[in-house]
Amino acid sequence: MKIIKGLTLVLFIALVATWLGSLFPIIGSAVFAIIFGILIKNTVDVAPEFKPGIAFSSKKILQASIVLLGFSLSIQDIGKTGLSSLKVTLVTIVVAFIIAFLVGKWLKVPNKMQILIGVGTAICGGSAIAAVSPIIEADDDEIALSISTIFLFNIIAVFLFPFLGHYFQMTDAGFGLWAGTAINDTSSVVAAGYSFSQPAGDFATIVKLTRATLIIPISLIIAGITFYQKKKTAKKVALKQIFPWFILYFLIASIISSTGILPAIFIATTSWLAKFMIAMALAAIGLSANLKDMLKTGPKPILLGLITWFFVAGSSLLIQIIEKQW
Image (cartoon, rainbow, N blue to C red; front, side, top):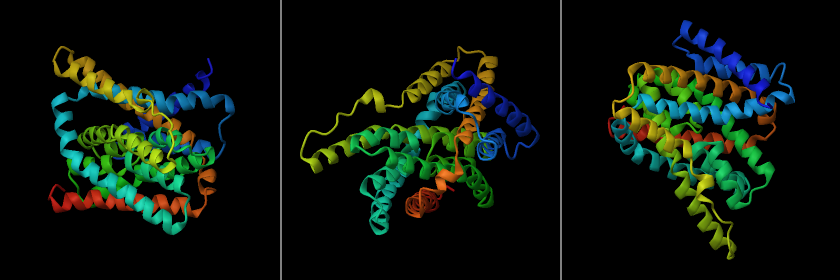
């Protein structure tokens, strides 16, 4: 099978990262995994035959790990956390689009790049960019540049957010809400959350998954705007293609677990396996991170992504400070 070599490499890195994470729990396996992946990619690199397995791990294994996390979280807690975070999530999304538009115009970044960087920052990184790009008929170069820009800040967030969270003496819930609403990609949210603490990781994961579901209405809105701008039939938006189905499976797992029919050993095992699979996914993401290519995107898209991300993170913190949720 094409994925065997890459999958084996990712598995090995995850094993080493998990062992080191047990020795240095303040850092955690997720951070070790992404560091090793980045180091390998940007020093010795990986051969082409490893890439299918790496791509499989960064997407499918990550989604499977999120589903497994559902078995250790009650549906009542998920509903409560998701609803409580919705206001902050909506504010940060609005901020992301406004800043991406205004700063993009100022920097003279192309309109499609503004939209892609805005939606990537606002919703769920590369997944959101992939969902929206066919709607606005973005070129491959624009998609690649946008994803590289967003991905750069995902990597930074994994290391920066837990440090700042501890520095600011944030609560588990406060940090989870911040990470879940201010970090772009699901994998980076999970990594940063669990690096801070177990409760923070659980909270951040639920917040992020709630946020990810908003890609559906956002995509439909963008499709409507595109339709009116072109004054002709816009490209059809296939709901089954943009809907993040793994979130539905995550909820089903949580509902099953909430019934109490699952033995404690099963829940404990799936919880451990989910964290190990997250380490695998992050190792794969690190192995895909070509730092040279990211820097080649030029200063303007990177600056746009940085400023947009700064305002999103800042607005999330500001709401918590105003409402005394910190």
